[in-house]
Every structure is written in C-alpha cells, then in structure tokens.
Image (cartoon, rainbow, N blue to C red; front, side, top):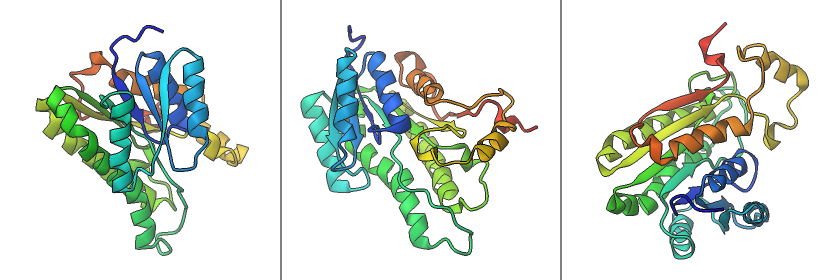
Length: 251
C-alpha cells in the first residue's frame, strides 16, 4: 500500500465490532491506524495484525479511555510509535443496560457519561493541542439514533448520547478557526457482535420501519467516517449524519 498522506488515525474501541471495521477502512484509505481496546484485550493485536497482513499500517494500543492517566499515556505512545494523531474517531462504548426510569440510578447515568462525554474530553485534551499547532484535525464522534429517537428503557444511554452530540457541536464551533472539523455519525440499528442475541422478530420489526428495506452494516458507518476523516471534508463541521436507511423520516 502507498500511504496517501502519512496521517495517523486513532479509533477508540476498535478491537472488535464497528470500531474494527472503521479501523480497517481507514487503513485502506492510507492512514496509519492506532487500534485501541481496554487493558488485557487480546483482540487489539488481532485487528492490528490483520490490517498489517492486508498491507496497511497499524499498531495496537491498550488503554482505558475513561481513565485520565491512561489516556495521556495512550496519546504519548501513539505519537512515539506512529506520529501525532490527526484523526480521532470516538467509538468506544461500554455496557448499555436497559431499565425503567424509576430504576435507573445516577451511577447508571455516570457510567454512560464516562464513555460518551468524559472519554472524548480526556482524549481531546490529549490530542487537540497538537492538532491546533498543525492547524489540522478531524474528529468524528459515533453517537446513535437513540439520541433523537429514544426507546423506552434506554434513558441513561440516550441522555449521554445527547450530551455527546452537544459536546461535538460546541467543539466544532470553537475549533473551526484552527482547521479542525468535528462531526458525528449516528447509526441506526447495526447488527454487530453485541446484537447477536437480539431475537429475529425484534430485528424484523425494526426492519419494517426502514424505508431502504435492509439492515445497515458496519461498512455503511465506516464509509461515512472515512469521508468525514478525509482531506476533502475540510469544509464540513458541526454536522450529524444519521445513517439509518431513512428510518428517521417516519412512516
């Protein structure tokens, strides 16, 4: 592979699922990719090795992206090994339990906010000074259709995702003069590993609300992230792209 630009992309939570697909896509685009997963996650090595086997450039970095000290170490390790981060894809997530509003505790809310607000803030503090110095950067948040179409039982997740959208828009306004774009992609229901146990009738009911007539794929999301991470997307910032096959249009 011939690297088109020599830029470095960090995809958080990229040891599996949607994050791994995004990492592989960015590697094909010519980025050197920092694959991330939590400490002890052996899939980090598997994904980075697969990218290298395909002719790309990647290295695995294990760090808890909700821990300030580990985030600082992550940014330093990536810079030392691959170079400074030019593209930051905020994809990491944790457990997403369901519960009635009367059962959801403040601790449940904080657990969601750790991934969708605290983690972006920590990572931003670690990589934004370098982006500002280079007058270049691409930040892509992965949020969810749930932020605008919250189903029953997902109040903590929906609230945290809505906060993430607000954070990204605030960043977009503030960072635009520094040549840094900040956007979000909002997937609809995308079958990945964590959805393996979803009953077929639930999937069918969801599909009935999608005008495009098919389920989305991780590749659909990766394609949008690829565009927003590209040189050509430099005049697009503060935007939220819903990737749901038209479901948000209603019946």
